[in-house]
Length: 138
Ligand code: DAT
Ligand code: MG
Image (cartoon, rainbow, N blue to C red; front, side, top):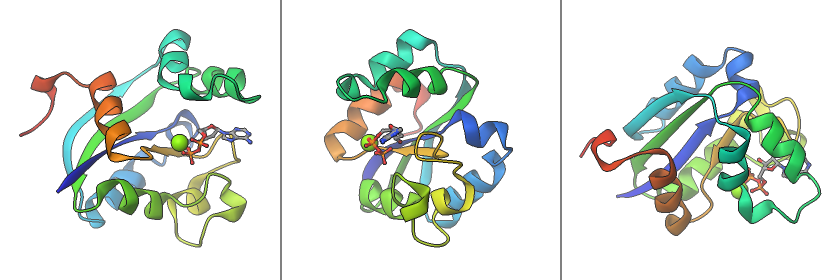
């Protein structure tokens, strides 16, 4: 078993896709270890995405991610990181395969509905950014 960290981003929350995305999480066989609904500050968004700080879209990304509430979750499954990346599809929804979450619900490359960790190492870092130990189901 391995873990991944996911977010339902502000655009998908505003577009009322929270229920469908959580349903998909369950259907894909993930166990929910932690789940919360929160509104990121601009500072927290900048910290979370600091690996992208040199990229041209960084300021807009952090502004968008802190514009309205998100859902954050820690998930467990075999091959969790790669499986979730398959379920969400390509960063740009125009390139995402049919029936992936981004193909179904994303608005654009920037407002792309969901986040998923890109490695096991980053999954653990991202989970610890959002959850304290006692907030995670064992
Ligand atoms: P992913 O979310 O698929 O892991 P990423 O880590 O490369 O993609 O980028 C993080 C987020 O930044 C992405 O979900 C949306 C935004 N982003 C990436 N590339 C972008 C671009 N060319 N224009 C606007 N936003 C972009
Ligand atoms: Mg990424």
